[in-house]
Length: 306
Ligand code: HSE
Image 1 (cartoon, rainbow, N blue to C red):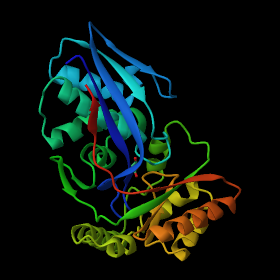
Image 2: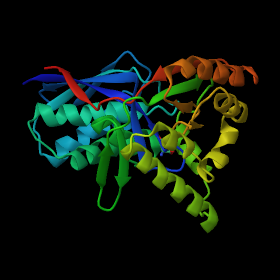
Image 3: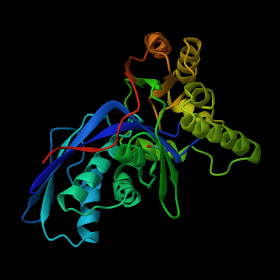
Image 4: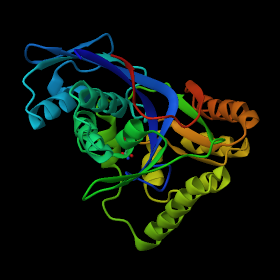
């Protein structure tokens, strides 16, 4: 095989209290990565606004790390087609990194296990987040709902309820280039025990909600007293957007990943349109336009051409 194309989904990280631990693949957007063997070097071809120096590009870093680890002698051309908008908390860099790790694995017949694939995909996140975290990449590689355990890396995947639906409001804001790094900088370094107990109880309930396929339990456990309060000032209108969505019937609402998108959970397709317009009105209240996307949990990265 000389060339392979893999598509990987967008994802939402944290789901409220599961900071850096929970991820959910969502079928809102997809990135496509084509890897083609060549004589030497790593090059990037894209029409999208992403860095083309492999050192600063998530996909570039994944290829570089995998070439080194598996002592591959070829060069690789990486073609990137972005579908996931970068910088909005939808796991954009993770989608590219995940598609790349899965494509590389298949191109060289490595048959890596899921934890190793996620580890390589996570190594690409460093280019955009400044630090490695695995919630988005685990979701994007494996699909469904994931729980990330570290040291050693161990991903637990749970199939989401079939009727779980989400509405994501993506505000039209200028986002800084290293947004994830910046929004990680505002989180408290230390947490008080009472807050940590509250988040832990809700996180545990979310896991049970996924296991029992219970969207109500998932939604009403999406309560975060640590990270959301620290970050919400970075999203103009957040309080109103959340309040509006809950009033319109959302089961739970929180920041998607590091933001600024806001995600609302529901199980009722009829509610979703109402929730979408309620969220748009929330942003309109502070004169911000937003795009709303109604979506459902997604499968992980898949080969679409070889
Ligand atoms: N868990 C990460 C964060 C996801 O919230 O910073 C960012 O992509």
